[in-house]
Length: 179
Image (cartoon, helix red, strand yellow):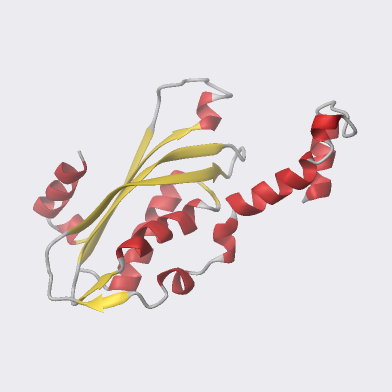
């Protein structure tokens, strides 16, 4: 990866021997590895058996989970927050694990639409919940820094599974709690 960054820097017309750029290919490669560390994680590792018996059958919501990802089309960042809710069915997941699941999928080359679905399906498969709702709101640098160059546009995506899809009142409760 370091060699690839060196080639890119040279292709934009820079001098790799310039003082400020001497170590940039190594730093950029290290940063990219960090920003895409989700590829090195699995759902099982992230959850780490943090599932606990519970007779709670009411909605569990974690909102405003910040996320940072890279658009798979331009390798530019998109930054936002995720809201994740589920209706337990005999077990609950450790609170921090929800944020870690969001982070695992965000730290891959992504499009927001797919990431929203992946997070919802992961929470559903791990918890066997009655339903899962995920809403993600993000600003995309590929839209802000290039192309249309719109600074105030943001994107919202949602995925509703189980009772969040089949019961309008559950969906409405979730959406009212995140607004």
